[in-house]
Length: 441
Image 1 (cartoon, rainbow, N blue to C red):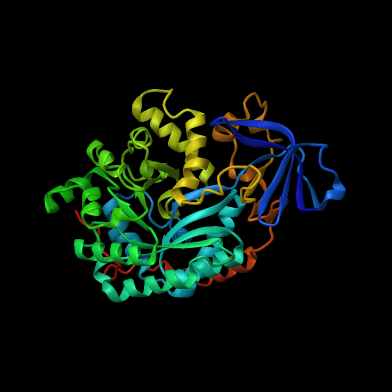
Image 2: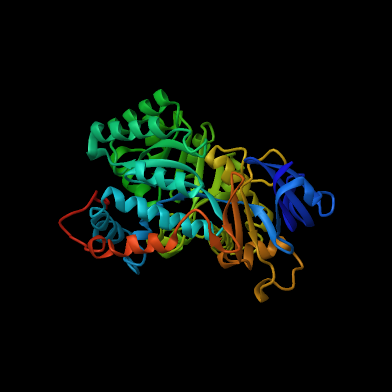
């Protein structure tokens, strides 16, 4: 007896290393996993405890957000049309100094609601007060790799707090939560602190999620101050001795890539942020050719405005075509591979990122009846270049329905909005004499 059968949908499958869409299928779910994918008519209604008619919808793996600062939704729209130094020093870090722990809980729930509504079931989150982040993920029913960001000047005492968090929440929510360590970046953490973080990660048996070579200017500053690039700083301090997610990597050089390929490294790409802040374009093709894992992320909404991974996929492809002046760059199949297979690899979660028996039942269903996706000559092209977050109708994570016919089932969005609203007047005050850290120039 199956717990759920999703009946009549078209399914994005991976066959022989390529993605294709099989029309008119039923997806059977038992517990937390996909049990079967069959052509419609092969599974009888009597075989399922719950039969959900999703005829004409497109089923894809739950989208994976490989780098985000989800509770930053609290500050959406407060740092527009400014340079990256001002973005950090005059806006973000002064604003974030207003945060109280419970703000992060409500901000995380708001961001999780937005992601569920746009088909995202898994996120690598890098933020603060992460006990509250984890509580929100546990309640929302999603999957997450949660990292408590820490700056070097906060010292060992703060690092101890984050290691306590890792121990407490590792494997929580029935295994849906993983926890890593999160020194913020080489430019906000000195070598001694990075080495201490690497030592703690080895002791805990976890990875590290860190910003690295976000811009070419950061690379040049590192060369001036340390004589080596930021990835080399991470290598010599032992950070690369554990699994790592490097956020952005626009300033990563060819020599860095050769070195990084000798380690368990993934690079998360958040193209909308790069375009908006004028940061440049990463060497994604070189990353992949060298065997580095590459996944798609959204970054925080103060630089990307949404937590929409479909949008980020499209922008990533367009940015690479434009920057190379080559329309053949980053074709659809490569982009889908990064978004799903690469996303799962980046998260070190091999049981997500694909719709197949035995995989976790993380499933997003999109309507295909909008004018913007008709006609449907190529469903994969529509997915990348035409579909939008508003097409998402039903979402499952770990076999549980989180969005049904467009309605959230685990998050009371009206209450979340009310709780966030009463905090906004305090949160949006920008005191120039108060900031979490300083962005170097």
